[in-house]
Image (cartoon, helix red, strand yellow):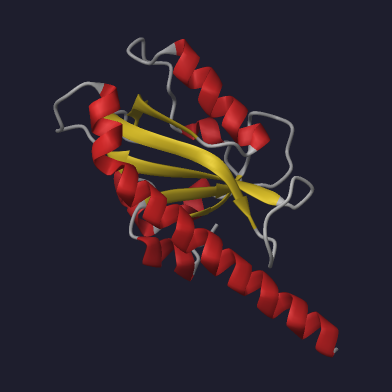
Length: 167
């Protein structure tokens, strides 16, 4: 669960979960340093834990948002919501959570390509405004992070494919 370079370069709090899981209790594979800071935890402590390690049982969270985010973890389709989460220290914080599948195909993604569920978190505890406005204010940051991670994943997969063809 050591943070990979791409996650550190992204600059946002990011998690990567196991691929192709049908359970909504996905295991953490990697986290960014920003995620460690946001949650007050270490990548080592998170290794193999379930994605529900940041409980979202707070009554402020919309059950529909919770359901949409869980569906996104299994389908790969993007979903974004503002949620109240609990840090490992027990402290509550308000975060944008964007969930989607990260394609690792070297070409254009297709439905049968392996996807890893990712979560992108932005701490908005100190921001005012309704949830839609808060999400809109950070949409560009999320889009940039997704494009960056997809590009890096494809580059990594292309290198791995090329290396396997050489041997």
